[in-house]
Each structure stands twice: as structure tokens, then as C-alpha cells.
Image (tube, rainbow, N blue to C red; front, side, top):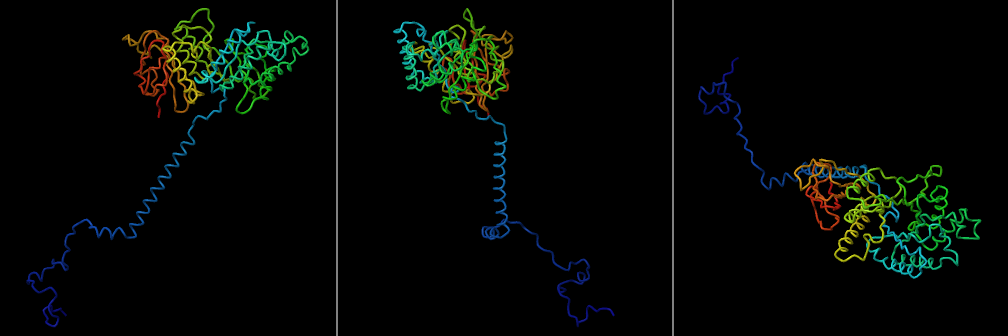
Length: 484
């Protein structure tokens, strides 16, 4: 039965009012009206505060804070792990002889019979002790106190050399007051021929007990150690083992008694101690940086000798350097800088850098240089026991300010690094008679900037660029390089 839409019993259709007959019949007319377009607008303050206080935002904020601190702790842990596992130098425990400078005192009058002259020399020696300590000297080596064929044991006799014994004991007392150690030089003193000086003790002349008794006597007086030559009869494994036992009896943790061997030959004769285990027979080997010569060595000869002597790898025995041969006076300060920056403990002689008799104009820069180097060596690990790297120059590694060409033969110059960790000290020594500037192509791996530590004229201060330096004739410079 067809539905009669116009039947009055159903009433009018909702929304039909107002529609024309054509619109009522249209099938495309939407049943629901369309929604208005959405317009974005920012939240106002009240709406933002209401939304921020919701539980979702609170959880998000706590999650972000927790994530930040976890990331920070993870970064810190990684940094600590890198520092711990990264290779780094191991601090070295050094003895007192490795931290101090030696002063070689040789009053020649000690070998004479003129008691008055000998006494004057002894007095002049101990009066310099406070000054020596003030410039960094830590130990005095007394040379020439004994005749070459005599035994130091004869000083124990009541009727032999009592005056010399008293003078040396006085030196010991004064050295202790000045906080200096005293080392006796037995070089070329034949300790095995005691019968030549001891008379009725001939039966002990070749017995080790006689030597040990002599050593004990002087150790009881307070000496810090002894010096022998590598050509002495005492320089043998058997004898040095006996000596080491005596030295250990009088040694303590802070006051170890030492044995120094003075190298007089080109190559030190090795001691075969492999059968005795890991025993230290010799504490220090005293070497000369220049060979003995009948004439003054020129700057070129000195540079060539040093380049040959410094390139071989140094052995495990702690070295003590002295000048040895004779060089021109112009090279005096260069050799001082070299000895103070080489691995080991330098040994100076009277009338070298510690001379107080110079005029003030000459003395002031010399004392300033000596004091600066000694203090730097005492507090810088790189100069104390750091590695040694020789930096050779070649024909293209320098630029002469007086020449437009760098193809000439290289000047007599030496350079090396003393390194400890990331700390590097560059030492430059110009043995030539012309100014010298560095070429950046010389050592591209070196840091470009550094700070002056010392120079022969003590006339360089502050920060410098490595390639803005001009070395003057016969000038040495020590620079502490900056490295990240």
C-alpha cells in the first residue's frame, strides 16, 4: 500500500516548512547541516595553566628530567673511563741524586804538603756552600783529596794525615749545615794496595775486609757516597757487590748512599750481573759531553761531536754530565743549557757557572740562567726524567735571515725534545756564527706556540710562535710548547 506523504494523520515532515515543492522533491538535499570551519588559536594563560597541571604533562616533564640526568651521568662515566684506560706516563720514583745538581770541588792544594795553603782552600770551599745551595746545587763531589797510590783507609790511623782528616770532617759539618751532601772521589785510588801505606797491616792488603773497613769509616763520618773510575780495579762485579752491601748498611729511605762511576773511556765496560739477579751496583755514571782534546774545539766540531754522542739510545744507568773537553768561551752558555736539559744530573766545576768572582754585569745573566734552569729541572717531570727525542736538521730545515736561499749546507745547530705526557720542552742550540730562523717545514708535528723558559742571554720572555723565533749566534733557547 503506498505511503501517502500528504496524509494529514502523519502531520508535516520536520523541516519541510519553508521548502518549495521543488526542494522537497530534491534527492540531493543533505539530511544534516554542515559544521562550521575550525579556526586554530593559542591557549590563553588560564587554559595553559589548566592543561599544564594535567597528569600527562607531569609525567612528560619527569621523564625529560630523568633522561637528562641519565645522559649526563653516562657522559661523565665515559669521560672517566677514557682517562683511566688511556695510556699515560707512570710517575717515577727518583732518588736524591736524580733530583739534584752536582758540584765538583777539586782543591789542588789538598795534594800538597803546605798545610796553610790547604787550609785556605778548604775554608774558601765551605764558605761557598750556602751560595751553592741557593742556586740549586744538591751535592758536592770532593776530588783530589787522596793521593792516587794511597788508600783512604790511612786517614783512620792516628799518626797519618790527621790535618787532612780534620779538614774533610770540617767540610762534612759545613755541608750538612748548608743542606748539601758530600761525595768522596776515590777515582784512581788503589784500595787493594793498602800495604803500601799501612805497613804492619800487610796481611789484610788484598782482603775485601780492608776495603769495607775503609768505606765504613767514611760512611760513619756522614759522606753520601763514593766515586770510582771505570778503569779502577774496584770496578768489578765481585768488588762492587761487597761495596753495595756496605752502602746498604748505612742507607735509609730518605738518605741512600750512592756509588758513582766516572766513565773515562769511549764505551763503558759492562758489568755482567745476570747471575746475581736484579741488583743495582752503580747508581750514577758520570760522562763527558765533549772528548778530551789538545786544542779548543770549534763550534762546528762541538756540534758534530754532540750530534754523534746524543743520538745513541741512553742506557738504564742514570747519567751525570760534565763538559769534559775544552771548547771556545763563546760556547760556554750553550753547553750549560745543554747539560741542564739532557736526561740526568749535571756536574759542574768551580770557575764555571757557579763562580762568584765574576763582575756584576757578566754574573747577573749567568746566575739568572743557572738558577732558572735548575729550578725548572727540579719541578718539571719532562726535564727530570722525560723522554729524549733528537731532532736533526737538514739542508731544507732552516732559513737564514741573511740569505734568500735555503739550499746552503745546514748550520751547526742542535735541537731535541724532552717530553712527559703532553708536556714538551723544545731545546734549540745555535752553534753557528749567523742568526737562524726556523722553517715551518722543519718539524710539522710540533705545536706552533709555546712560552720561553730560558735563553743564554735571558732576554726572551712570554708567549711566542715557534716560527717567529730567530736564534742569534751562539744562542740557546728553551721553550715549553703548548699542546692540547
